[in-house]
Length: 154
Image 1 (cartoon, helix red, strand yellow):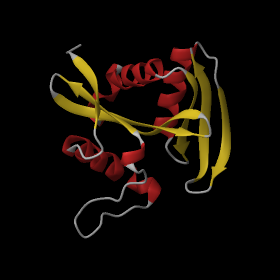
Image 2: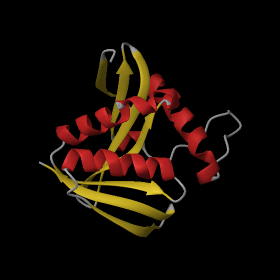
Image 3: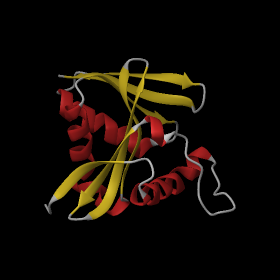
Image 4: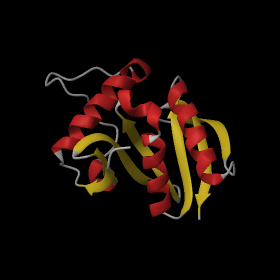
């Protein structure tokens, strides 16, 4: 595996915003979002209130993780790895590193229809916790039906 690194970045980082646009475009069939007149998608999260991480391969950004806090839980708000790099464990590596940096209760949610994302998170969380996590279906006021996993990082 080539050298990778995870770096915390500011809410105004152009590289983060470029990756976020790819993420929003990929999820647009599920979210119904359309780009605005400037060709950009609106973001659902206020990046000034979150911890933002770029995932670099060599020196090239290949993904990101936006971490927030919700109801006393660390929360993965947005997460993305370039599609062509998803099958080699890089996403799980990023997720596990973020979980390890922040001990305590966690939650991760996926919107309805995001089957690949749900399967990824089940596998990543199972491998991180040894299967010690809970999963439930619930209704989110903003997103509608979501799947939520909860666990504790020790």
